[in-house]
Length: 392
Image (tube, rainbow, N blue to C red; front, side, top):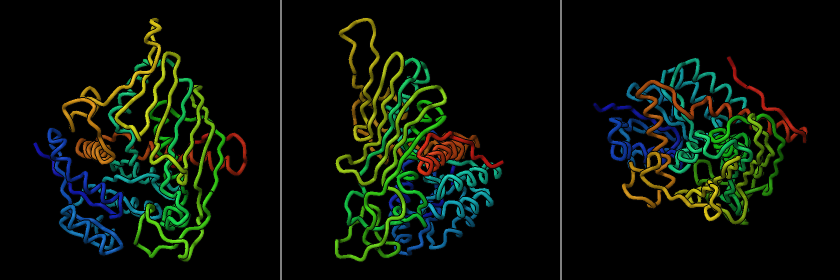
């Protein structure tokens, strides 16, 4: 039996376009679920982007006022793809209207807003979801299963990183991501959020940490409101404004289970294109995964035979979660959009079943608690405990 779910998307920039595109593929790739998203309304403060979104993806309606999306009776679930400064206001209104919410990370302007948002959604009893899309790579899901089944023994070491140079050009424009008043944190919210969530998924909660941050490029060309993205560039002669949040974050971490590790993220680094990666070592084996080679997993599971005491490269195949929805044969490359599609289906399954899945705002709050400890460490220059921020 088909289950139609009315969709509203708020924010029709790059991420909003991705959400809209993958909703349109659910009925094809995941036909057996019976879920049929209905693209009801898209919103963007720039009318041209709202119009383009409607024309590209087939929304029934468009608007420049996001409140109209929430007020539309045909909309059951909302994707929040707006800049961070709108997350709290949009979630508050959506939860009050009983709408289920898929919010892109970092879920608010900073850890305290994330805590407030989590409490709002929990008390309203709406389904929540967060855009930690790297979780959904079939080989990441397979790696997590190996860890949970104890195939690698007890985890002793974890190194997570997100090194991506979208801001490496000093003439990259001053988009909202570089402005504290619209984004809140910089690399902490944008990139470390993924690093910390992946670590939680693989190893478990962080107990304590010590962290540092830095801004390498302190000013950027100004861009007219509503134009350009964080990948856009200006020129050296353009008027410039100050970058008001951080380019780089790193930390030494101690997990609750005793494992030790490192987190590192940077948005201005030369070299890596999108190195969202982790390496994990246990008492019986090890593994490595890197989004730049997302269809490969390096696995080390030695036995008593010395000729097998080395690393094996595992390629994505129908043996791994969700892969068969895309391809019936092994070693065919999947994409970023494929991960967002899997993510959208998981969200809509939660909406249809009325059972909260992961990652929801509970998992976003766990990430925010790590981020808040990092911010305290920047000031104290000491180790800091990770504390609960939950608001009852």
